[in-house]
Amino acid sequence: MTPLMALFRARRASVSTTLVVETTDLRFLTVRSGRVEKWGSFPLPGGLVSQGLVNDALEMGKIIEELFAAEGLEREQVITSVSGLRSIPRVVTMPQLPASQLGQAVSRVARREMPVPIETLYLSWEALSETGNQQRVYLLGVPRELIDGQVRALQAADISVRVMDLKPLALIRAVAQAEAIVANLEQDELGVAIVVDHLPALVRTFSLESENLSDPGKIDRLATELQQTVRFHNDSRQGLPVAPRTPVYVTGKLFDSADAHDYLASVVDRPVERPSSPIPCPDALPLGEYATNLGLALKRV
Image (cartoon, rainbow, N blue to C red; front, side, top):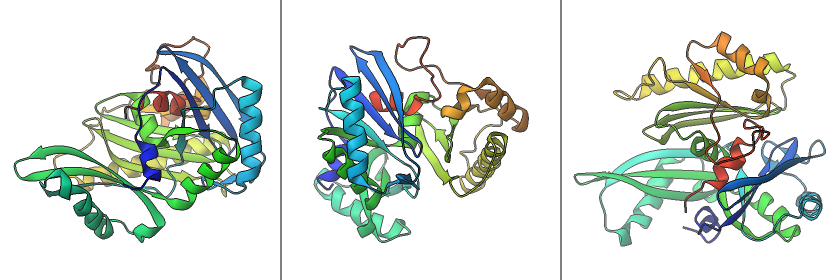
């Protein structure tokens, strides 16, 4: 594991400040003594973030610095997320090996499994279950430029990052279901994650920046991607299909609207639910908008 990827592993603190970078805005949420304390957002100028990439780290750093100063947020031990765009998750099965040999073996498997040169990715992995002489390993490759741009922006703001997490994984953690379809819809991005046995079986993220869609059009696009993702998963994983009544849990700012929830429910043939907050919080917290922040605050490392 590279030193930078150690950001994906850290010790928990009693006070957590979470920061999510969307295309349209920054979102912060703080947790103190196990309860949501405060939250808010700050709009971003168009083009500063595109396709998950921070295009101007210094400008973003100034905006983050202003936000933290205005809100009185703690700058140490911040937890932040990275867009799921172009990330590559894999669950692989390999021979069971001693811990001292597993890292090198995982690197060799990653070279074979990743569809792009691993030199362009930051790789992280976690050992899962063992069966007989076989070992399951969760592999994650994240484009270096996405992480590097965000790290530079946070450094410019004099922010100490305790841990980073992939946005879809934070959402899965926030939903906290053994089997689920997690849908996320923002102004310029949508995502679908299939969860089986608490693990991300399939994760897809799509940019909407180049598509001139109305809000109902974005929901239609999400419904299409959701159905295709479930079909692909069920066709490719014998014995592990998503059940017909497995709910879709909706997250993202656009789903804080009751109309958006009801519209999606009318166009997909399965239950559509809003997740409850996994952390005690005031009733006024918009759960869809801050679902990623809640998942970040729960990260166990």
